[in-house]
Image 1 (tube, rainbow, N blue to C red):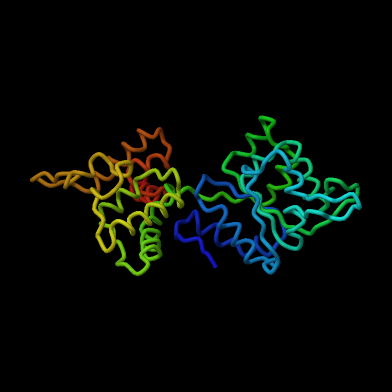
Image 2: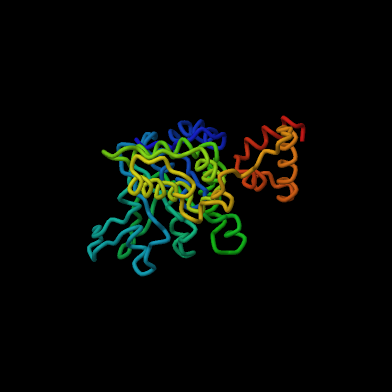
Length: 306
């Protein structure tokens, strides 16, 4: 079974509660940026549930065609009232449905999905009969659904029906301490029969400082590229794509130690204070400026009683 890799506090808090959430039948709403692993989390929730011998059907709501969307979701009956096409929701009877990018559902369809969630029944096109199915619903969104409700683009009643257990998948830039672990894991996975790519310490530092707009998905693509083009090599800063390379990375030393020496603790304290000032007190932003994780920053702030 696929696993979510990482030891950062943000992830371990989620992983600790997954078995409890999985065995229940409550709806789960998974938040997170693109590429953070929302789909993988849904896979795990289904695999560890009592429904794991029945299907998990994923519906990408953003990819649904407006024409025929009701047939696609619910199904269609012929003139005799027999089911001619079983929609995705009915096909998942006994199992789980994962509504990915649920915010993309059109408002009229949201009402029908809400009824299905509340009473487990729907009306198929071409029939007046109500058809029932026992389905657990997982949903995901990279949008702020509360803001979508306030803007009138998402039904409040559907939002609250989905929002029984909310889970937010952290962005990769908030998991800086996990970067090394993920590099080694994907390095082995993509090496195939070739020598495994390794990463210098300076490169790991660069990658911990990088913003990762595509999150885990972007990291996987990067590792696959490195494995293909640099088999067995120790990756240096000059091997990185330009967008991942800080301006100072091309220099042999980012900081030159003066002959008189320095007080390292004082330098660290000064840099932390400068980062917090530049970030207007935003600790996540200050951590990114320093190239460390937020938790590491908090630890060092406690160390200096900030």
